[in-house]
Image (cartoon, rainbow, N blue to C red; front, side, top):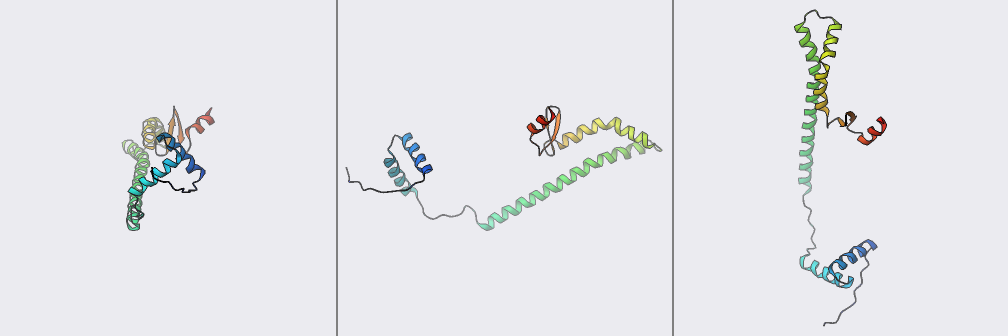
Length: 152
């Protein structure tokens, strides 16, 4: 058996506890564990640290993501315009089919056909702007539990 030399390390309590747990898993003393890990580290250790990606690559990725976000926002704006446009289109179509219709008749038509349009609107908004819990709707920013508690 070769002679051993003392070596001292000053790990944090958290490190020491983690080392002790791991040493126990391996059936080693802490001293044996530290020796084994240092040797293992020396075999695989390269002191040079190179970033995974360069600053240029990170900027390119950020710009790509910003462009993607802008396209998504534009798409959302387009869909919202289409959604609101369907309401106007419903009125326009009714008036074209019923020239001379009164305000009350147009309003009644909107009331009569609202359930079909509302279902479409709710389906389009669900997950983006609103969430459902059971048969109740809540803003997507609200935790559903808050809404359920408030509704009770």
